[in-house]
Amino acid sequence: MLRLPFRIRAKSGVPWLAGRQRWWFVGRWLSSESSFVQEREEQKTKEEWKGAGRETLTTEETRKYRVETGEFKIAVVNSPTNLLKPRYARVNTLKMDVESALLEFKKQYDEVCQDAMVPDLLIFPPRTDLHDHPLVKSGSVFLQGKASCMVAVALGPKPRWEVIDACAAPGNKTVHLAALMKGNGKIIACELNKERVKRLKDTVKLAGATNVKVKHEDFLNMSPEDPVYSKVQAILLDPSCSGSGTAIDRLDHLLPSFTADSDVNRLEKLAAFQRKALEHALSFPAVERIVYSTCSINQVENEDVIKSVLPLASSYGFELTTIFPQWPRRGHPIFDGSQHVLRTDLIEDKEGFFIALFVRKGVRPPAKHTRDVGNTLRALQRRKKRKINSFFLIRTMGLFLKS
Image 1 (cartoon, rainbow, N blue to C red):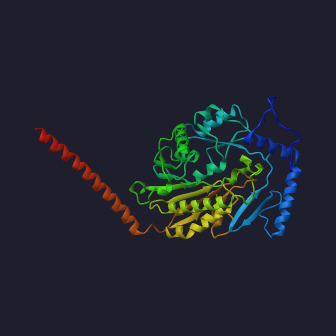
Image 2 (spheres, rainbow, N blue to C red):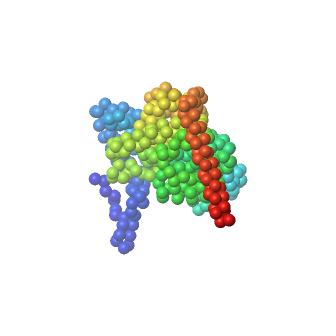
Image 3 (cartoon, one colour):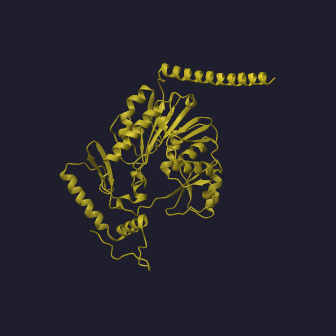
């Protein structure tokens, strides 16, 4: 068992660091003083996997491997914890333009620059602390990673569109959509968890996104045949996932409970939900664009989900479409069209995201589906008219009896 060279205690005799702070210190010590531990574990893993006939996923330098457990492919990363990640900050164009934000930040940070792919994103040197900056506190700037910002840009909503953010909390992507739509149109932001709904509302308020309507509702319970959603043109689906693409930030790989195959059952449940949510999104009759994204590096949550819905997507006239064509890292080649989906690399890009865009280019939903939606709308209008007529009839009778 690995032991630290000294015990970390305060003068009172109680542990000085606890929880994640303790593991942060352990990670720093491991990366600076005990790299031989990683090398030993890596060599042991390579020998075990070689004996089992398993496959190396990428190069030795990245130390990424593929572990096959039943049907699941789980990418395991033994990466150093001292990989420095740039600080990204997105300008909230609902409150401030990018040029003004750049001028303001350059007063304090000479090296700040604008990202080439996401126009409203600024790049700062690693470890730049902006949490207490007035622009951040006022909601004029949001601290948001590049890959996370690429999701809303990939969806590309237009002003005056109606959009659904299916799993919206904490709301950074939601308010980015609002900014891209210039505050026009309508965004229905769904969230099932009550506590996360509160956080979502706080984010929307901070951003000044007046075109966002927050709904405390399960996206899967929203009927595509409901006339309320008959004009929805785009859906952003960023469902619950394993979060393995942010493992370096969270240092999960340093926790005693972390093992490569300990979460197989959880991944199975997550993938089933992700697949069901994507199938549901595809069934909305007027939708033209759908983005599916995760902050996961696991194939089972990414390419496997996309592959499983391709026949259904095709029946509705949807096709995978290339996003950010200049981006070099693409999906694992397990199906035709995998070159259209996008991956960010946990080592190269310091975060592991997956983004896929479906665009409707062909067949619309069956005519029966469209007729059903129209019939439902007309039925609701007749019901509303009957209620109004009943109200005036009762009031008239009341006045007659009084006289």
